[in-house]
Length: 243
Ligand SMILES: [Zn+2]
Image (cartoon, rainbow, N blue to C red; front, side, top):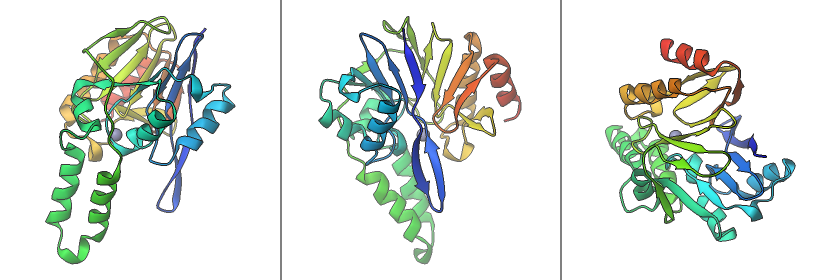
């Protein structure tokens, strides 16, 4: 039987304490972590997984939905600690994860810093430095579009560009569970479209979310916001209508 859980990983954003939700799926054969939190969060991931009775020592795969720093932050540390785990992503994101291509997120941050008067650049430049400091690592395997992974009763990789160009989401068929990554968020118990502020291509992001309506969904896990349980179709349609 598959154990499929969101791991609440806290982080501080200025004065506020927030939470991101990497997901871990585990059965007798596979243990798969989806996204890895910020840099330095490996101990928190281990602790959160242990609370669910899952040992990261058993990790077989680490799936990355996209290369933003809150998703790949602890990836290099995880791979060093658990080298048996295969790192997987889309082919597009693999080039950003390994650093062979310059991240569009970094490019935007640099443009923003350059557009500010020198006296106001400090925060923007610190953000640029932070993005640059994230450790880069090779991806072991890339997905083809709409590939079906032969584990947990079938896991569909859905190409969901928009937030970033090679973004993917995952659909666990047997569990009727959608892992959105950052294609959607959850606020006040409701799923919503990705935050336009951090989305590179909003029309593309909407098209990506529309694809989710093809699937029978009873549970949605958003990296920012956590777990929604109920009528997935209705929730996604509402999110599209409200954006
Ligand atoms: Zn993101």
